[in-house]
Length: 380
Ligand code: 0WD
Ligand code: CA
Image 1 (cartoon, rainbow, N blue to C red):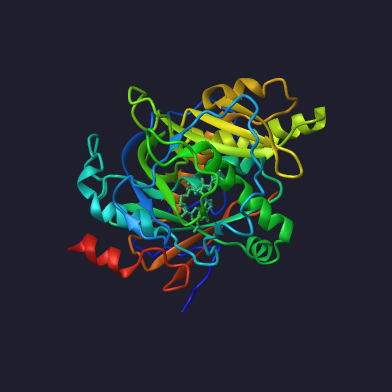
Image 2 (cartoon, rainbow, N blue to C red):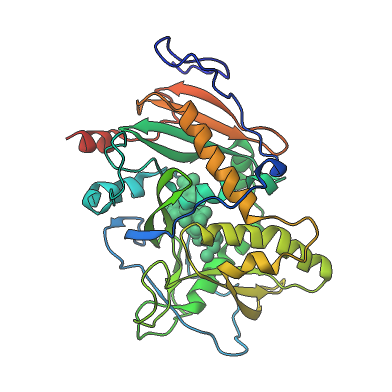
């Protein structure tokens, strides 16, 4: 019994004020002062093992190992023989993060909790990756998104829904694309040790079920956020700043040979890299530049906080303030729309390039975010 509307769906006892039905993503609308973004604080972490089982600990955390001057990394090595690929047709929604919340409710900071606030003391719970997509929206021209939102006990949970286009892409990937997706994980294996006193093992198996995720709390304008993101590794130095300050994001990218490639790297790739690492407060990004045959030709470190300076010479380039203001306004838009506190109701927000953000409402639909085991446990 799905219902679906772009118009009014408020019950008569709710505010008579007309709600905004859409949100523009035009970048010019978001060129104002940088909004408040509190330094993200790690409140916990969890691990997923080689079978994608949840562990409430840091067993999958790896350590960054600085490579030699001219590394000889072949990212194609092991693709056919030592690769276990996660089944990406399985949609896990927020499940692992919800598992973390149930096991660690006492660790969520409720310091400046206002009287009207929720049981968890946060306004939004989501994945970092979903927020990255929101941040880059004003500059995105290729891929749209769908984000489902439900309110439960005062907190709004946001979980991505795969678009038809994304599903089509996933199901029709070429053999070349499939292999290139492996390259990023192989680079991680060349760069990381399992133990603080260890060295990388390029002869081992790459298993993309394994993950270490940080859980952070922060505030964007008046939105209290709790989100989780996968972290590739940390620096070995025990005296390094506490997490997330000790974390390192690893990336691969095609080597840059022409001014045009350099410009595209600044305009598109650095935007995504910046947004992803800025959100959880990961201070450095180590990039492996590789040729067409998957050989790493250079390794370069980017300080997340310096990326916005790096791109300022680029004509008409992206601006962090636009990304953050759009995100803040989108979260306000969600709050204005998601009024009913009912986990069986899903508000599905949709954005397509060159369009406004719109939404539809669904009851007891396949979009439902919160599983019964979570609702029952929170209620008990
Ligand atoms: O169900 C979903 N729609 C998604 C689930 C979408 C994105 C992520 N996830 C899950 C994954 O289980 C992951 O462990 O959430 C966890 C944390 O994700 P995140 O950090 O919020 O996601 P994101 O920032 O997009 O990706 C971080 C890393 C990627 O590294 P690169 O350097 O390529 O950005 O997580 C990996 C990938 O290594 N990754 C994924 N792992 C599992 N499932 C996924 C995915 N769908 N997407 C990226
Ligand atoms: Ca990475």
